[in-house]
Amino acid sequence: MLQFLGMLAAIGLTALCWGMYGPVLHFGREDMHSPLRPFVCVGIAYFVIAVVVPLLLLLKGEKGSWKTKGVVWSLLAGAAGALGALGVILALHFGGRPIYVMPLVFGGAPVINTLLTAAMNRSFSQLKAPFLAGLLLVVVGAVTVLVFKPQSSPVPPAATAAAERAAPADAPQPTVEQNAERLVAVLLSIALAMVSWGSYGPVLHRGQAGMEGSRLRPLVCIGMSYFLIAVLVPLALLVPLGDTGQWHASGILWSLGAGSLGAIGALGTILAFTLGGKPFTVMPVVFGCAPVINTLTTLALHEVPLSSVSPFFLAGMLIVAVGAATVLAFGPRGHAPALK
Image (cartoon, rainbow, N blue to C red; front, side):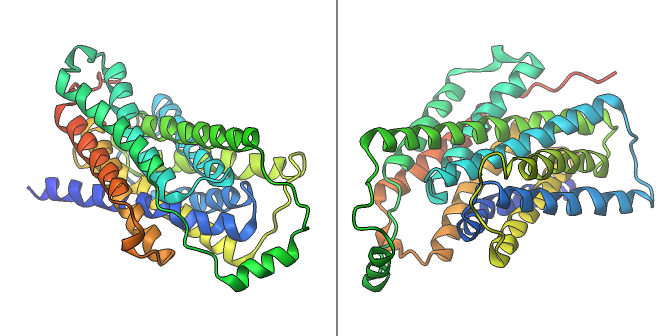
């Protein structure tokens, strides 16, 4: 019973951290006006929390050992996590808002998680009608969330006047084609995050199993992948891509906070697996709860009144949650084959 409660606590920790991740990262991106600089800060936070700290703790010893298969799977899990974070940053950069970007990501990720887990465990024969109905609910709910997303609060007249003075009178307005291109870019970025984070759980579970149940070693590998993908690569691309943003103190702090939330959430996932959880159960629960936390966090940080939230948006959130719960309840229960 205590082990089960511990697993629920670990799942709750992950859902809380990953639910807050999007809104916090949004502030970092806004302050630095750059898609790459916040990503660098996320990677630095991961490196400190997921590499430096675990390596120091490993000096005291821990069960498990470094195994090639475990290292490879864990590095892949870290790469999936980093690419998912990049997808979120790009979606926000192209005009997406965290109040609907993150629910869409967390609505589709459990579907990817379940399908990939079924493929890895060769259990597609267990995908029954109730499970497929759950997938449909997630898709319908996600579309509803996108269509009826809450709108930004009206800009104060003083701010509007200042913006008009700063902008040229003949500044060109985006064309229909440009708006369509931005929408496609947002949707593709969301898809990248959805697929990457949906793959995270099953791949990480293989990595942890490959290192004989170690908790810290897979976390180190995740942090190393983040350091490569989220720090070294973006720093090298700042000049070639002509990034016009600036390093801003508040933006750095917000982005470091987002990276810290992501790393602690990764640790929560590992702890949930250590306490007996499986990707079929752990990840859908995380992805089902995180959008609720995300929405509440966004509304609180932006001081958006609940009266401005459309009932259709709330209905979409409910449909996503019901779909995720259905996927959880009726998903296949196959186990990963033993690693040799």
